[in-house]
Each structure stands twice: as structure tokens, then as C-alpha cells.
Length: 445
Image 1 (cartoon, one colour):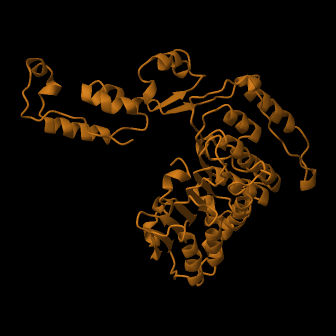
Image 2 (tube, rainbow, N blue to C red; image 1 turned 45 degrees about the vertical axis):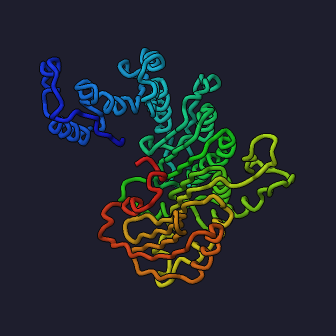
Image 3 (cartoon, rainbow, N blue to C red; image 1 turned 30 degrees about the vertical axis):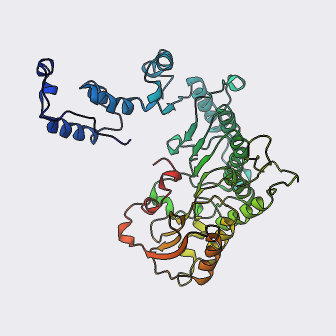
């Protein structure tokens, strides 16, 4: 959170008799400012002590109360952190405008744990088998008696399932939650990835495809920002070959491409085959009816953006797009003496269908060779940048393709830059991400 130093009187200001009785007000303004600056830089993740700081002085209250109330965590199984009392206080109290995030920590009931334990106990008594074809698949299904009674939460405009969840949420459960949030503007979803069997991959692919398929209907209600990042195990598992083969199938890429047309901000990281994504995006965007067209509108098509009663205008909303290059397209699999020409030309073709596009960033993750491509519409020019940890030269075909995209901004110049990234400066696995303009769109860091 950004802090602004509170307005504190200068040391030359007169100190009233009442202030003199309070040690804090008796301190010179410079010292009070130094103490404030020290306090704001030492806030712990648990916000320990922030409540006391908010009571130091009136000016501190205005600075630290927003920090204290920014996030509420509910844990129904914990009497000291349940809903009772807190909700009534929040609704009626003055701190409601300060609350920006609510975390719902759900603990599975003992009865559920007992059922799972009993199930595994029985399965452990089954005779072992040698052949893979004789093995069975265990599917865990969870339902709640309240599934049909969920109240709609109109106050929520952002929804996040981050990597701390450590599991993939079933698509039906995800849809139940999403459709209950009638004013949803942003979704951050980080399903947990791990080495998977081929049977598990099919379920993972369907779950992810269903997630993308649900987004257009949410966009019609106002959803504009989508971040999807498949969270991985510790960095040592990057070398596991099972991670390198499971890209999202064409169905998921088709639905993701359709969903991106509805969003103003869209980030897709980990399993995307970008060439397939760009081709699907072109197909979907090309099918959008032009102004005045009365042709059929598919389930993925955009709603009119113009006011009721005026001529319908159909146009992709996308302004900011961030995509990671899938591990099967990782730079080690490229010929490093050749620019990633095909990918960047397909990206330019897709960008030509996105009239509102301001920034597109493609990046290659990993722990060795890294790569970034950026298209950025600035105030005075349109700039494309290709940066890599290996020597990369300007490509005339790439330049020509992106010049055509830049022609929609006739008053701006065009620039094509290449940069060398020193691998020694990338000491963390997410080091390349921090070089992106859209870093904060990718996930919750």
C-alpha cells in the first residue's frame, strides 16, 4: 500500500498547553516524521502493532487505519475469527469503506475427513496389482447442502484463488461461486500444478477449458480483468519432463482466446500454446459482426458496446495482454541463431484485430535462458522491444508486421529495440517477470 506522510506542524508552530501535556505532540515535527517513516517500512505481514500505531495521533490514524482494515480474514471454524459480530460491525461501522479484500478460510469438517480416511482405509485392503491396466482411478467429489442456497454477493468486485489453495477447484464449484458475484470485475485464478498422470491431465484440461468458457457470460455482467496462472511446485521441479509436455489443448486455447476479447486486461501463463492462441483469437475476432451487421452472434460474441437505441458496435475490448511462452516453446527448443519469427508475426496478426490494444507482452519463464517481447503504445511512439539472455538481432519480417499494426496510430512514430538481458541479474525464477510492464497483472505475488 502507498503511504503519504501525514501533515505535521513545523517545529516553529506554537505548542499549546494541552499538547505540552502529551509527550508525542511535544516532539519536534522532524522527529515525528522520522518515527512515522520508520513505522511504515516495518509493517509485518500479520500487521502486528498497526492497531497501536493508529492510536498514536490523529494524523497516524488516517495513515494506518486503511492498512489495518484493508484485508479481513474469516475462519468460521475459529470463534475469534468467525462471521458473528464482525459482519454487523462492518456493515454499520465507519471502517467499511476501508475494506478492500476479504479472505474466506474454509476448514473441512471432521465428518468429511473421517469419510476420506474410511475410504482410504478400505482401499488399502484391496489386493495390489502389477499391471497398470488393472489399477483404478479415485475421483473425489465434494458437495454442500447449501449449494442451491448461496446468496448473491453484489459487494464483491474481485475474486482470487491463489496458489496457497494447493488444489484444482472443480469447474462446477468455480462456476457456482463466480455467478454468485453479480458485480465481478476481476478474477485471479492460480490452480495448482504438479507432475500429473495422463488420466489426470484430461481432468485438468477440461477444468481449465470450462473456466475459460464461463468467462464470456461473466463479461456480459462487467468482468474486465482475468489472470490465469498455473502454479508450480518448487523450482527444482522445473526440470521434471512431465511439466514440459502438457500444454492446453485446442479447446482450451479456443475458449481462452474468446474470453480475452471480452476483457480489457488478460493474462495467461504456464500452459499456453501461443501460436494456437493467436490463430484462434484471429478467427474469433474476424467473426465479430461489423458495425451495422445483423449476422448471427455466437455464444462467444461480444455484446454491443454502444448505448441502447444507437447503432450496435461490436469491438474487442482488450487493452493489455500478457502471455507466457509454454515450456514446449521454451527458448532452448528454438534455434538461437534465428529470431522467434513465426511467433512474433502471428502475434502481430492477432494484434491487428485488437484496435484498443495498448500493451502486449510475451515472455519465456525458467531458470536459464529468458525472453521478453513487448508491444507498447506510448504517448509519442509505438515501440516493440525484444529482449533475451542470448544475442538476438532485429528481424525485418517482424519489423514489417508490427509496423502495419502501428499504422492505426498515424500520429505516432515507430521504434524497434533489441536488448540483451544479463543472466547474472536474474537470480530468482520470477526475475524475468519483474521486467514486465504487466508484472502485477500476471498473478498475486
